[in-house]
Image (cartoon, rainbow, N blue to C red; front, side, top):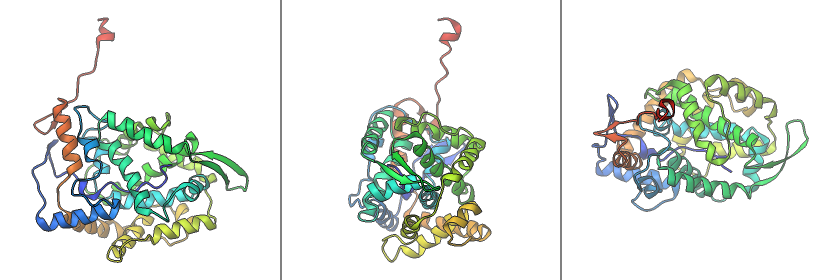
Length: 342
């Protein structure tokens, strides 16, 4: 079950975009390559110099779900996802169904890097890879979902059966992820969001169709209405507090913990007050965390450098497919043959 949904690899922010021209000419210096490699290793456990899942993104000449000038690509390539991932974990932990799926079927506490790596893989391939790779990855996730089932106690104390592929539970995981990455981009990124909130929500809805979720919110109003509908189902139990405590204090290297604890507070600051009350870890000031988090993410970007192997691979593939030329997106004209009767 894709319950924990953290960020993409931080080395994946695209280097330059001027007037919708996407270029790949910026390179890391030796010190930035050192820090970038350590950051990738921290998130995935991968020791190789090649970014994980590079081949799945680079192969073939097919397009994928998204272009570089579309909202999902922009959001998921930004370092604000570091905060959005933490926020998504907190939200998803509040639903007894998704929480039980984590406790019963996830290896998050025994193999956190393995759990993290699997989710980053899905998010990376879904955002940047061609359709063929996306279908294979969706098949991997769906096969894993078939094994995830059981029962949980609802907020009212009733026993309820669940399956990871249940559309109702999938929808909660999807909207918690989507709301988190959207709000953290709005608060902590300086990159404009193409199409605004509605653009991100409507386009990212395509990502969960291969997982069996045919109906998802298509606008910000629909997203907010969905969150309101799920609110009566949310609850805080001893298990909830256990998982939230783990999210607050994960087994990271000591050198990474100060930055992580700051980002945790930044994630908490973006949550609605009703969720903050349930989590009961305070209400950090967004007025303080908005500028300071932007500055911290800027420092991280400087440290790991501007290179973006995954995006560069996707851009080259789109050029081979004829959907990009000279760094610019070329969208195919709509097929009007049925209208013209030809």
